[in-house]
Amino acid sequence: MSRMPRCELVLLSVVLTASCGASQSFRERVYDDGTVRYRVGALEGGFERVEVGDNDLAWHDTTFGTVSVNSTCEQYEDVPARALMNQLMMGTTQRSYLVDETVTLDGRAAQHVIADLELDGVPVRINVYLVVKDGCVYDLTHVAERARAESAQPVFERFVNGFAVLGAHVGRARD
Image (tube, one colour):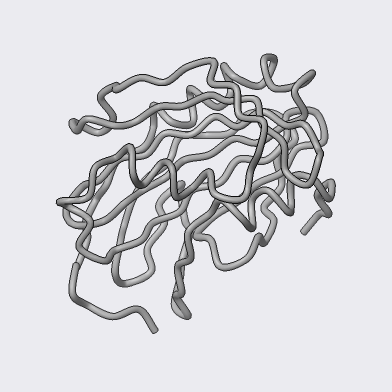
């Protein structure tokens, strides 16, 4: 596991929702923790797996920043995506939205936001896709220094385009 710059580590720990799973697996780009099972796209470059809080998956590359995926299954079907996105952005300041749109991800409407923001005075860019499917919320996030974020966008988009929920067992508690 590699170390991440402090600003990215702090931001990820604030914006990522928690998931607790003692029996997680990640093989051939498929994550399974007994509650959710999903596939992600390939990450090109020098990305290395890192641990960030209690999130599902995270990778860091010194050039491209940090990419993560997280799931939370607490019957969010009726909560608007905008409210969930606002929850992810809590603790940040000086938000300037560059993209704020609804797109389709894995056959569902998804909220997509790219924003320049600050956390504890540190300027970063965050790119988030948030989708609610089968009673679970999935957020795919890229965090980077603003100067490096644009060059990483094609890598992150390919990663997101490979995302697909393969199963969710809402109501089944995570260990």
